[in-house]
Amino acid sequence: MTLHKVAIPILGEEIVPRFDLTTEVIILTTAKFSDIQDKKIIVLPRSSSDELCHTLLAQEINTLICGAIEDEYYEFLKWKKIKVFDGVSGTWPHAFERWRTQTLNPGDILFTRMVEGNLI
Amino acid sequence: MHFFPEIHQLMRSPLDFAHILDEIPIGIILMDKDLRVVHLNRFFQALTGFSLDMARGIPCKNILRSSACIINCPILAAHRKNRSISCTSDIINTDRQKLPVRITTAQIMDNQGHFTGYMETIEDLRSTTTNDPEKNVAYSFANIIGRSRKMEMIFQTLPMLAQSDASILITGETGTGKDLVAEAVHQTSVRAGGPFIKINCGALPATLLESEIFGHMKGAFTGAVENKPGRFKLAHNGTIFLTEIGDLPLPLQVKLLTFLDDRIIYPLGATKGFNANVRIIAATHRDLEEMVSIGKFRKDLLFRLNVARVHLPPLRERDADIRLLLDHFLHHYTKKQGKKINGFSEPALSVLLNYTYEGNIRELKNIMEYAVNVAQGIRIEADNLPTYILEHEPMQRVPNIPVAKDVPKRQSERPPSPAPWQPEETEQTWSSVQRQMIMDALKTSRGKRNEAAQILGMSRSTLWRKIKAYQIE
Image (cartoon, rainbow over all chains, first blue to last red; front, side, top):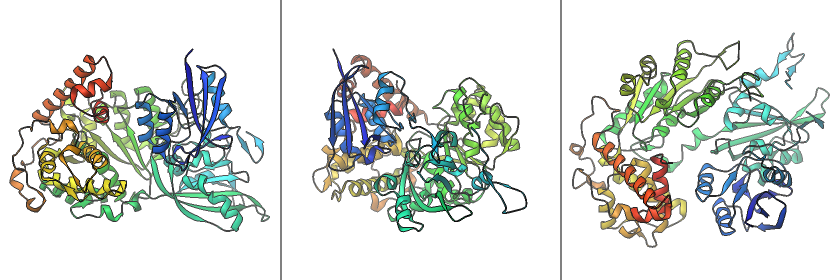
């Protein structure tokens, strides 16, 4: 059974809005599109796109779900054969669930929309 | 759900608040007390790429995506200090571009003086950051540098073009800096305060391109679940840059031509037009006259775009600039990477000056980035250069290219060609030969880029850049 590794840069429970300002990344190991088999959080010494890219490669990540990412790093990760879902916002479990059910798209906004405490 | 916010009691009749905000040439975002987006003005949408429908009701940091939001939220800081706060920061827009901005926050009070939400203004600092001292070098316009005769002529022309409002057609081979010129013209024009919107006509399928450029109304076609303003509307009072205009499909050429005639855009499915005050800059590496002759480009559109034309010469016609550019990028990358490299060894310089930069400035820049990364000493040595340029047979270039101290040998430059955007035969051949070599190597290696790079004697990154440049899938 081939294992698949999904990385999600996080800020608390949510996906961090900026890839380059990430200091924490959750790595979820799963048999492709099934339940989580392993979960670990890597805390980075500082936020740096270069170092985060290096970490993703060192961890042999297959899929990255992240917020805003600069084109240079996006192209680099794509070139390194990492599938990138960028511009995603919301909580990481929600994003992972959408990925697992193959309904996640780049740019997805997964927050509940509210204005002044009311759902819109 | 659509809503039409109004201002009451300021004038006799209620005012359309959204319209007022849209006319202000600064990005504006309004939030409720929980920092959720209530409204965005048009300039904000142009800057970030988020439409109001996409952003409404979402926590603002996921829409603004500025570094300040994550490091030290200026809104919360303003709330704590109970005063407006201004800070410089950067954002990443939906085109994955990082843009420098100034963010200013304010609290919004209702008519009873109760706090009801926040407002942030986002100022695009791209025009002011070009005053970076590093870029204020002699022989330059904005951040384009060169001192060859052809570039001098361009530097004399660009400020005049920037001050006019005429459409500009920028031609030149790939890597000659067409995008840079377009942005420089915008930033030095009276429209600098307005948005600069780029559309790559070659990057999107025709159906998406029409909706991307002209916008659409909700329900105009299957999948149009919300109104989309379109790039022309977002570029109102600014500049629209149509790159790869040669790839614009014929039906859209007609629509663009109609816009150039009456300056009104009609989004797909709209009955009412929008009068857009937009300056058009177009760029292409293709020979548009040739395309006109074979019926792939409309002659009348060419005439409308070709009000002013800037042709950027390839680097092989800018011998006098090669040393200047080498020094410029050496300085740029040593500073960026915090290294102490003073210059080039004689053999390295000889290789660099005799190389034919078929990828033009983009290639020269990549070579310097690689060399600065690899160099260990205080000079760039020949073995710090990518292998493929060391093995390169110099093309039919003028021998003994001058070094910086005796640069102005203009006799080495060819006179301006009568049809300046026509790519030269030799370059065409070399480009196609190199493209073919890469394709052959990829075939031999069965698509494995590592092996292909070894066959070609290139690093993987150089091969990758070339694959992208030559658009090899």
